[in-house]
Image (cartoon, rainbow, N blue to C red; front, side, top):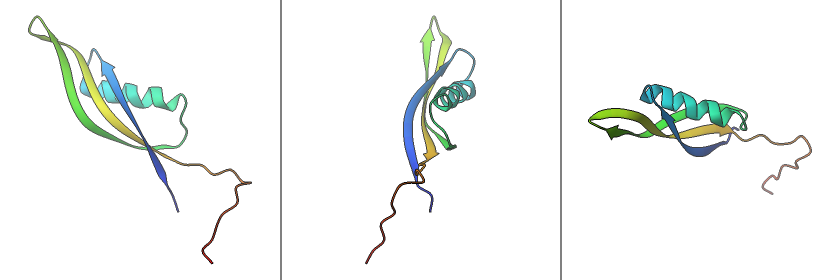
Length: 77
């Protein structure tokens, strides 16, 4: 049975929303193993002088919870 934990982050980029999502996943991958899913929850942008200057995405990143080999499993009696 697999269990995923969800981590919520905001990625930013000067280029695009796709790049902002990629940046969030890349940053999470520096400290999290087993990333399996990413969901873009919300997109927004910063506007200055009538131009988009920064793309932002709020993402939910799902990763598999790892169990150590010494962890005891509990079964229902």
